[in-house]
Image 1 (tube, rainbow, N blue to C red):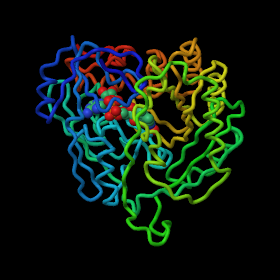
Image 2 (cartoon, rainbow, N blue to C red):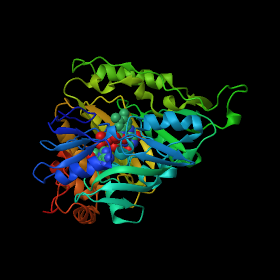
Image 3 (cartoon, rainbow, N blue to C red):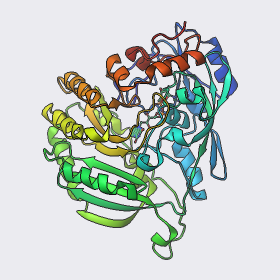
Image 4 (cartoon, rainbow, N blue to C red):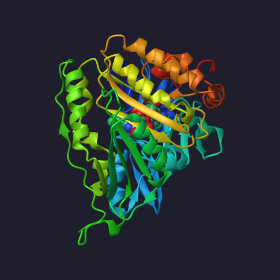
Length: 443
Ligand SMILES: Cc1cc2nc3c(=O)[nH]c(=O)nc-3n(C[C@H](O)[C@H](O)[C@H](O)COP(=O)(O)OP(=O)(O)OC[C@H]3O[C@@H](n4cnc5c(N)ncnc54)[C@H](O)[C@@H]3O)c2cc1C
């Protein structure tokens, strides 16, 4: 049984470990459209994108080797950013884009075209991939680079164009393993968004946490960059030391009511108060800045057996009012979210299914058990689409096929590219079936 990180909609598939590209070629060659086949990384997408009910799911984490040559990483697709960072940070390099967890694979990062806190200046993960090897639906190995259809369709293509076996990725040189961080508290959403509009371009990384239960939309803005040697206290021993702490475990299950409005309100209050009103130049670690949730293993279990979903959308700059409206709708629905994150995106990637576009993105974790949640989110989907926005496939577990096609105007172009790469129609996922993503595809 496989689920996404939100632990909703489990389905059964045959999970196969692959050890090299030849294994992938064999598995894809043997796949049929009736059962379908799909690559899976570390299962950190929230919904059903890395599942294929009744089909074959390739566990790519057994293909996890990588090497570094100067500032180029050559990695097998199942290499995790966790392993990569442990090797390259002490050598003075960082990944070009990291999500809020380091437990994702290079293949999953490319297939979802993930974004990080630096999207407004450095774009998405796919913008830093120089080449990749992909096993297409005919079992052929294609080596592709930016500018080709195979590359554009596979970046953000959610595993439906082929199995990425290897990628070459540009790394960022760093002088230290520490971060230099500025933090500001803002009493309301307007002030928070104004500060982001005015100042984000001065920082490589920026992200805001929003108190989802505060009617004013108060929040904490955290921005920073990799610290230089001069930023570190004199006598710092090893400026490139990197040692993410061993992780605490969350209990194997929690009663579904443990995370409710009262506990979320208490958490949000404490989180807001804990942040300084304003602090400049704090020196902190990479895990503390980028991956605070990774300190607790299986934290997704706190949402109880029914799981949770993450609602993430992006709207263009001129529709910034949608951010406040969405927060209001979620509050009215009684949806307690302790993790609500607001970010500004820079220009998007030319890959047709890539999610980011210039504007504002809001992401809120919501327990799946909230009554009428589907209706509230369906209505919100309509407002996001009307405003020219869209939703993120890597977080999605519930949107409709209509919402998808309205949000991704290049869907037909992507489908045509996909059909050329998978003429037998063997790549499939639960998400693809739910959204009709591969509709019209051969055979
Ligand atoms: C705590 C947390 C924080 C997160 N923060 C962010 C964030 O800040 N920004 C962001 O963009 N995302 C974020 N995510 C989402 C995550 O980055 C993406 O879902 C990512 O795709 C997960 O990688 P994975 O290896 O777990 O892939 P999986 O979840 O296993 O798979 C995701 C998709 O990639 C496909 N895929 C996987 N490997 C391959 C391959 N080798 N070849 C072809 N297709 C493949 C799968 O078929 C599936 O469609 C976050 C997730 C969590 C749990």
